[in-house]
Length: 134
Image 1 (cartoon, helix red, strand yellow):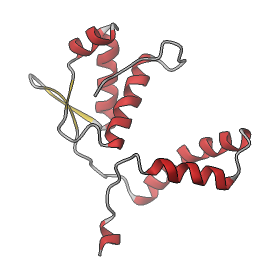
Image 2: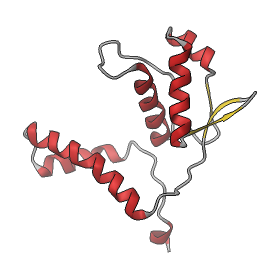
Image 3: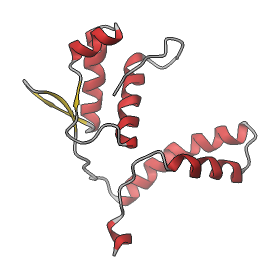
């Protein structure tokens, strides 16, 4: 996976990188057990302070998205759905509400938003719901 930075973004560099890793996992570009570049490698490639990369990896590890294996590197973690259905739904709503608020302020109709979401869904890797498969 190729990382890039937007110098004009108000988002801190470590947050930009975290978002790229999250999106890479969601799209299937970064599979579980994939090795990420070392702190030194990525800081050289992006010309940023190694502490910024270390912070990115530390935050992703705290979220459970990556695991650090001393002497081996940083790897994408296997998915661990440890949250209850209710907790997962609360998190989803916390993400959806600001999106829908912005869509309203931008003048989109509900149908236009739904159409855009449907168009984008195919670009992401979804887990199959075992209950629906039965």
